[in-house]
Length: 102
Image (cartoon, rainbow, N blue to C red; front, side):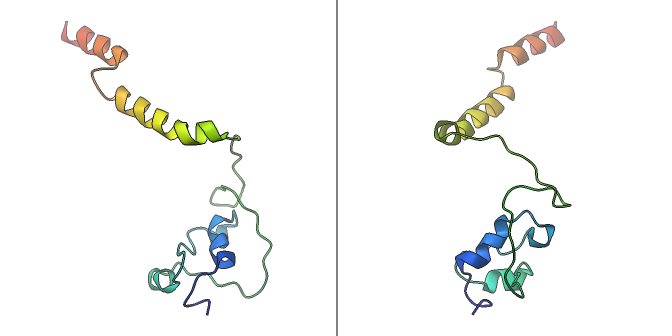
């Protein structure tokens, strides 16, 4: 059945820091998509998993703890800052542009 349906246990490999599991088991219901795109990983037996973000060698990259407020509002603040840094509304960019034009 693991080649037809993705179970939560199978999908959790997607969140493992082990390089063998990187870019694997994206599906949430059907394994056919992972099978078609070569991203299906079916373990031979039980595996000990360590969850988190890791580099290509499996070395864990520590992430700062995030509170609920910053998890919800943070992405909007980051997008706003990114948008503002690329527009003439940003005071720093306006002064730089004035200095160049002068």
